Length: 364
Ligand SMILES: Cc1cc2nc3c(=O)[nH]c(=O)nc-3n(C[C@H](O)[C@H](O)[C@H](O)COP(=O)(O)OP(=O)(O)OC[C@H]3O[C@@H](n4cnc5c(N)ncnc54)[C@H](O)[C@@H]3O)c2cc1C
Image 1 (cartoon, helix red, strand yellow):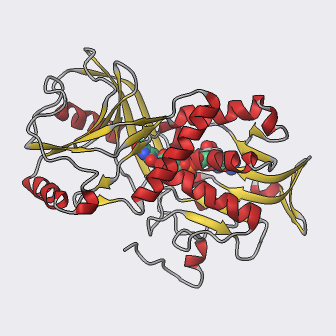
Image 2: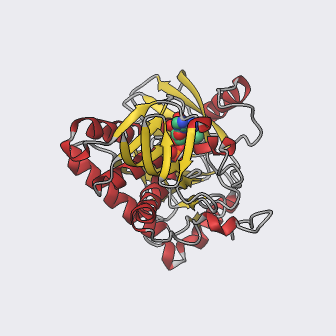
Image 3: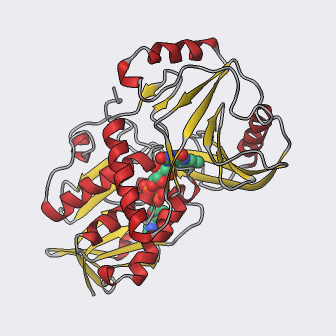
């Protein structure tokens, strides 16, 4: 069977790319074993424009956010589902430095549309322990990533428009790939191009394993609150993020482990997470789920997009790191243009930035 493109990995990266390509009439085959513990299935999907202790605006945030919003709204209107929730983030300040930094940013016109002046009480004082002060981030959102993954799969299975494209529940085996002058042959499938979107598993990839991925494992708890308190109106950020999944279940995470054996949940980090959550919440909670996944983070904190330097039929789309929800649509669009038109991707994203360099430079 002939397709235009085989995509290995159907997380957020592979799924967005498949959709972008198939909408432009390319025939696409996506291979993924559909593990429930993949990074995209676990992510909270938060889009936060201002992060870290220094409250720095994310790289190209305005452009990325507008593009992401437009893409998700397009998908929503095509399928009649809700994917993107614009929500405010309440950030708790437990050190004076953070309050001072917030006030400093408030004076900067490029942050004016993002931040509100500090306030004294948390959004739900009966639920959260009092901090020094609170800041509200306005231009934030949350993507329902599992819903997006399910919706694209459903559209591929049902819509005439996507006939000839498919998601296959299968693990790709590199030893079975044949590189030919026309492209690639994988079992019964032939394609002119193959794109690897395997998340942190890129580190084992025989062709792209040289790229400087620096994966970070993260644990997540699903908490059930004793009372119906936490409305779906906002995201709460203290030492952890709290995101309402439904009237009673809250997503709570996460940690960053750089040294780990596999992507399975570990008991010690999970109990640390629970302790932290209890220090933030005033009300008792029950743990209803314990999870872990690995983020495909890159040493210079920029995505990895591009074509293999020696095998022109092989491509990579990876490195969405901690910001897949905001970076994904824009990067997927650039990948689609590279694959369909040969148009070069943004040089800050292009894997050619690592050519001839032993150690990649740190991001500025
Ligand atoms: C705890 C946690 C919280 C997060 N929260 C947020 C957040 O709030 N906001 C945000 O924007 N981002 C968040 N992220 C990051 C976000 O999840 C990632 O940026 C994004 O999901 C990465 O998508 P991906 O498709 O590149 O990788 P993945 O989701 O890891 O997908 C890779 C896919 O490739 C498949 N695969 C691997 N090897 C093979 C193979 N050999 N054959 C076939 N398939 C294969 C895997 O099964 C998987 O489905 C979070 C991540 C974690 C871990």
